[in-house]
Image (cartoon, rainbow, N blue to C red; front, top):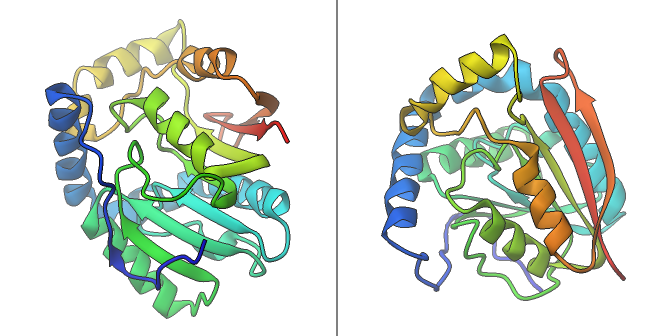
Length: 234
């Protein structure tokens, strides 16, 4: 595959699954349009360790010259963290967030970024096996249809490649679970689902042939986030 030049455009062709998906996707776009001007200030520090770990794992999986798709690239906070020898294509549903990524690419002269595209993660407009690895930073709690997104990511990663996720998974009990329940009632305004359980991803792994969980570990700060590496069968 020859990725497009770095730009903010491009959408998948297939329609969303239904009205509920359309509504929630619209809420996500609206929420992240509000977050875009302050996103880096609010989240850069707390999520830095997870982004760095995900970028390192995906770079190692792809290898020199390998192609990586960054699903939910946002303002591009992790783009400078990848090995400069890999080729990057970032996608996001929010144009305001992608404009921030464009500015970062220009400011830091990231010549290994081949594309920044407005695209729905559940309708990826790439051919099968187009990438050696995918990185999915803090996205599972955002998309309305996480299983559909994971199906699409699996489709566009080549056999033997890796999917690297970093995400917070909801607490099952205790005071943190109570806070997440409160936040969950306001998830549309937040733009994510704080109560998202690991079982959602675990069920997808169990039901999907040719996918193997090769690593799951806690990430700073305070083990709030998990790094998860999935490998496709060769």
